Image 1 (cartoon, rainbow, N blue to C red):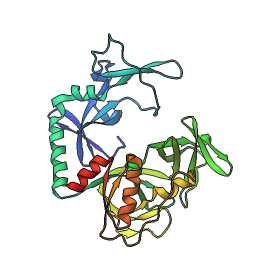
Image 2: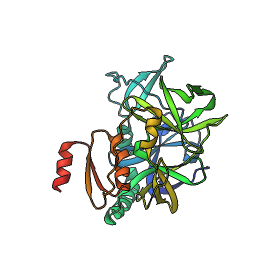
Image 3: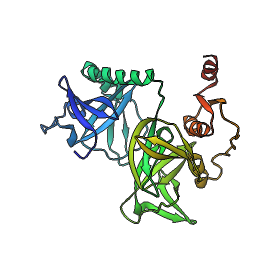
Image 4: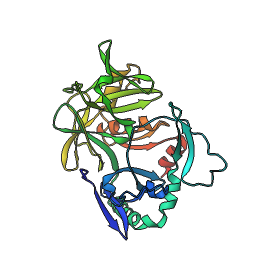
Length: 318
């Protein structure tokens, strides 16, 4: 009930209005036929897991969300493989066996009930495409001041709230034991690690290493046209852009990564005479594509990206 997102109904189907899109909702309890008789018509009383399967996006209504965990998925028993709702199972550290929900099975069960919502979402996407807008998913947060900051969502591996009693000081640096490894915490200017409660952290990970960026508050995830209009005047800031009608600082993740691991990568200086030049960025790592593209754009380049040489050649020929 405290969420800013609205739940509406279209042809007796509950939909969630999320960032100007309509997502059909489905109750997992009803889908699995384990309804205990409690009222489930009001999705605001539960949590909604936003899921994307191919081009289809929908919300799964669940009772609670605990945490994220890396698991090894074991195949289903042959006697259960006919059930579309499950893709496998796993054994947790405490010996408990849990079933793995298959989003494809849920999408199939949702079927035509969400077609009206998807039609409206497709119309909205077509309108953006017709206007020539290229939208970027951005995570908006506050760190060190009341002015909002943003980072491309594709760079962020996870959003975490770490209990402050789990944060340790070692060799003059804040660390946290995260997924069986020590993860260094990096503080932006003006940001202090909280002394109690939970500390919001943005986790950036690549090639088996993780860095946690300490922030004050996570605000929202938005889709906007990323157009840096004013170059940054301080380290760690690419520049300022208008995001949801407000001047927002876009951070340079590449500035903070070496603060966690000095050998994360060797940064290359950008040429100052980059204006009006085009760059094709080819890298099989989505992490580095998402990180370097905004940096190149801020330097004045027109940037196109490709995950491999074949798609890069196709982009050059188009």
